[in-house]
Amino acid sequence: MASPKNGVCRQDIQENSEYPGPDNGTPRWGPQHAGARELANLYSPGKRCQEWICVILCFFLMAFNLTNLLMHFHTSHTWNIILGIVAGILTADFASGLVHWGADTWGSVDLPVIGKAFIRPFREHHIDPTAITRHDFIETNGDNCMLTLIPLANMAFGFVTLSSVELYHSYSWNCYVFSLAIFITLTNQIHKWSHTYYGLPRWVTLLQDCHVILPRKHHRIHHVSPHETYYCITTGWLNYPLEKTGFWRYLEDLIQGITGEKPRSDDMKWAQKTK
Image (cartoon, rainbow, N blue to C red; front, side, top):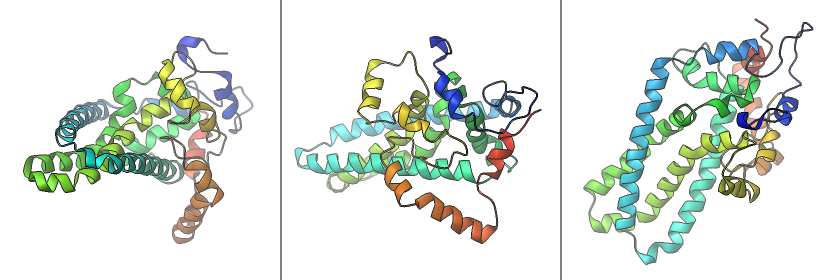
């Protein structure tokens, strides 16, 4: 078993052992895999700069909006706030699954702009699942922070320009959007925790055990090749119903029928790299 300071365990290796590999002992999984090394080297200074900017802007807007939500709080909003928070969590979980499914299943690292910047991490993650545990806060959360900038900026603009009456009537909606933004921002951090087996704070493991956030054991189901199920990675609450209804398979069949593209073909290409 890996040492505790690395935050990984033998289970991670077993989950990815179904990748086809050569007979010469080339690693099928992990940081020494040829595809994993190549993908890790595509992480650029420009990408790092984008992540820093997005994290700074995101947390500034969050602080500004939270302050204004607290300033405009009224007890009559209590139940709407609760509903808004739950709806925001569910929406974030579904959104995480949709983005995860799309990036896992379609597209290529070779696509202009989005390939190296946004599809690359998904390819790397399947052949080196513990790479995310070696990423710092900025690399882990930069892209998710970027996704929330527009709704958070729009909310901040509303707090500056709308009247008190208008803010009162839009308060429940703002709570929903803020909850959604919080959980989208935290999704990849939660995902990282689901791959970390040592050194997690007790409150994180408690939330995982209570399935408030994505549990480690639950997420292992996705990491069995060919990675075609359990895509939701914020709380994982929607994975079972989406799987039972065949939601992702219907979407894949529809897109394949229209485009002729085979699901996960690029993902498997990287998994089979030997040099």
